[in-house]
Length: 220
Image (cartoon, rainbow, N blue to C red; front, side, top):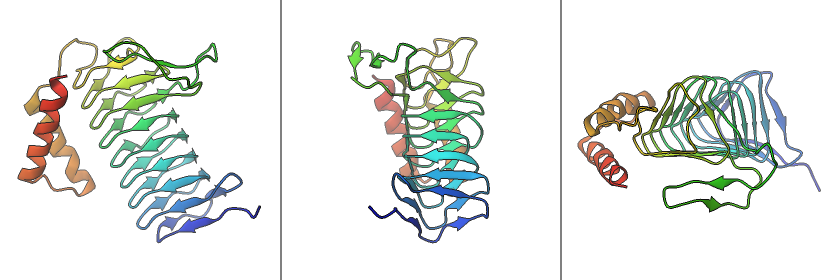
């Protein structure tokens, strides 16, 4: 059939950006920005206000107000997430307000090429998928150089750091590999610093919502 299109709905595209539409269209929404040296492979969607800062994004949906650099493949960034440095994210879902430290990389294929198994607290879950990276909950953060195994689950608000490779299940609000949990007030304090960086005001209603998120997830 006819080749797909590049659809720019008001975004800014620097010279030197490559669009590969052999497998589908590329859509760049209003107020988005794609820096020189980026390669966008369709089907791909760059949401409003999102910045693509270099390297390769293919077969992915990057939601509103994200910053993405590095290699991203077959993944969904729900919105307001930050991956401003190098690292590979493949076959993954990145929640809202996630911050991936420089060099954070997901494995999306086992060395055996076998199906990926998730390990939630309720017990192992067979996905039947050969390719599956990480599922990362809202407000989670990873340290620089973090390496995430195939099928890793990172809970809401977790801080992933430590001297060993993270487990395949990181509990909500985990504080690295210390076995401790981030406190409610500490979580709210960090969120109140982060949200204004994307021009989101921290109103009483937002504080209440964040507190509800903490109470619900921490009880699990």
